[in-house]
Amino acid sequence: MPSSFNMTNMPFSLLTEAEQALLRGSLDIGYYQRGETVLAAGDVPEGVYVILKGVVSENDADGGEVDHVFVHYTAEDYFGGWSAIKGRAIHNFIAEEETICHILPTKTLLDLCAENSRFADYFQQSLSAKTEIRSKLGGDQDMAEFMLAQIKDGVIREPLIVEQGSSIEAATRLMREKRADCMLVKRGNRYGMVTGTDLLDAIVIDGFPLETDVAEIASYRLITTASGDYLFNALITMTQQHIERVVVMDDQQLTGVVELTDVLSYFSSHSHVIGLRIERADTIDALRDAAAGLSDLVRAVVGQGVKARFVMDLIAAMNGRIIAKLFDLIIPPDMQPHVCLVVMGSEGRGEQIMKTDQDNGLIFRDGLIWPDMHRTLRQFSDTLISFGFPECPGNIMVSNPAWVKSIGDWTQQLSDWSQNCDGTAQMNLAIAVDAHPVAGNQALFKTSRNWFMRHLQSNKVFLRILPKSHWSLIRR
Image 1 (cartoon, rainbow, N blue to C red):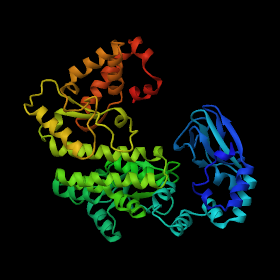
Image 2 (cartoon, helix red, strand yellow; image 1 turned 30 degrees about the horizontal axis):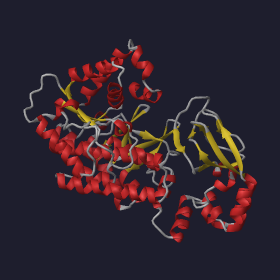
Image 3 (spheres, rainbow, N blue to C red; image 1 turned 90 degrees about the vertical axis):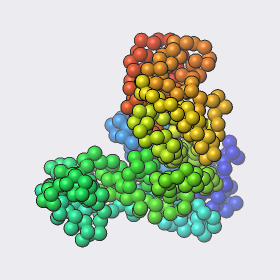
Image 4 (cartoon, helix red, strand yellow; image 1 turned 135 degrees about the vertical axis):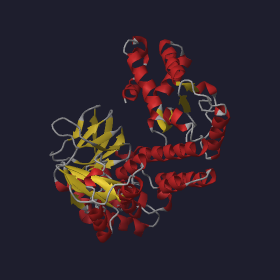
């Protein structure tokens, strides 16, 4: 079994032939059932775990309640190195399915670290040390290092805070003095955010007097993260939410603010400003150019050995942004409030890496009159094809009228499929159950989904044949 250990992956490729032989001779094997704890927070690790088969999640479960899953490790990923060196695990590692791991004992790990300084640096030092190792080895491998960076690794800004009762004028002057473009307003035990744009809109658009309490214009629905979370997750959140900053909270205490500009400067490869290019695109050609950069991003990720599962969320978010922007450019503005574009299949589940087949549909308001609907949707599908999104072999696209229905017809179709046990109906239903809204009036999708969920409560046939893998999808 040790002969199956892949020495070409970092950091094991840093070892000499003699050191690799020592490693192979020391390896043990661990077998874990689904749901079994491989390593619990506070435990003394056996060593470093390298996955041969299966999936392991790292989480911060406390008292049996999982607060946050940081990452999933799959074949050839390793975990537990930091814990082994420090002597105790700080997180829980749970087998998400039947898993087999190589185990490199802690003693051997420490011996190798003592013999090989570069190998030791990889495990022991900060992200900057790892980056230096990779730069000396040559090649553009910053993508993998970005995946390892945590929010606390130097990108948290100290927030500018004012108390409730501060006027708009005073807040504006303070932001200018501190050269900040946002501030947090403390209102009792809550914090709200005010940006420079908010101040401008309040005065020019809404006509608020300069003496108005700035707390009155703050937004209190903050998007938050934790300092121990991955910087990559912060980028995903900002991409999905179309925002430029997130608030860092640890144990319900304010730590700071992370801004998109800081994240992008930390990870400044051209392919990783795609989101900004997508938002700025005001023509189809400009959007096509931005979408072309996504292929470079995928090649950079795959070329540096970053695991597919770790980047699915970002790629899915980028694809969603491209599709939503194209919707804005092609669908007439007066029609957009009356329709909802949904993606389905792997796109709906957020599982694609490259641009997969188009699986999309359109739900529109009952009674909508739109004479050019099908011509416009044909243009939409053709444009996506020109962007590199292949035509769906099953013709599950908005260019196919069968997947463009009023809300009443859409829910009726779902109901008919759920009552039918033939293969085609069940396949179509499985595709539709994965649906996720990306543009237009999302209330149309939510209305149809809620109706369908209520309908399912009495549909024992459907629940019996629906794969368990889809249960979470129909509950979301």
